[in-house]
Image (cartoon, rainbow, N blue to C red; front, top):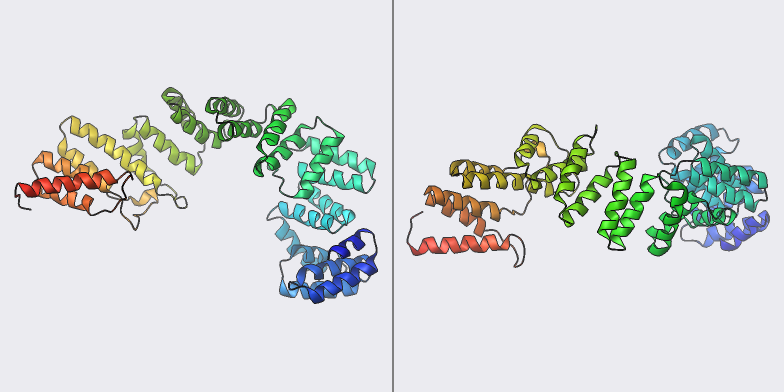
Length: 430
């Protein structure tokens, strides 16, 4: 396969065909060399043979993008139907266009790759496709096209560009060789480096990209994440996040990041201001909506939180049981206030309510119970009322749970056992 790609790159189609055919006979997985064989046959002008090979491939792999693209580019009667199918697939994810282009780059066919990128441009012009096309135009010696594509890259939005292929890295490095002050190329390359744990290089490129992208909230967010995660500088991270939020109040990730940082630094006043900002948003994402309830409870607005929890319906998030804990925390705070004001029966109602999983919260009871703290405190409330039978019953429920030493609920199990032992000593009847 490797030798065949070299032959294809050197336009020696006959040799490429021979090598790819040999590979199809030897490879365990036949489809990869078969696609390259079909491409080589097309370049050699042997289109009917190429189409026959493609039909065999699609019979085994009907969604193979490269085979569909090759089939759609022919004059076969099936081409129109295949073209329609291919377009439907490619429009599912714009990255498929770049995947196709990079396949042809790897095969040593920059011209074919450019055709794919031109098709992608007609669907939606993006910076990354333009950088790739400029790089390929340079390789093919088309100076005018190279300049035009680079201008397109400079004019395109920086949104949703996450380079993940080596061909993209080469294209961005080429762009920086042509223009060392290209802020977008620096930002994109920084994204790749950070994702591949080359943090110092990423931070340097992102910082340099501020030259022309200082009003781009995502770049400021990235620098905030770097300050927080890599430099261990929460104050610096807050500054970056606050700048980003001032530029783009609808970037809802920033509210989550800032609240975590404010909480870690005990900045209660800023948390309250942040809650007001979240409440003023026209639409709130589900995870932010749930986090807002958590903030309300932790800031002392538990009664308002309980009203919202009773009135609204919440969408369950995958593998998330923590939202029920927010509900329990709000009720525990209300129960605490009831106990302090002598409203013991109201506190009992709160504890009993904590044991319920309301349907509108979207969270069901787990298979392993973790309510020892609720049952223990319920027992204390019954004890204050003089209802010792109910108190013992609640403490038995708490003591029946198993929690390892050092975990949050382990002390409640021990305290419940202690209570049960003391009441057994005085001979109380259940």
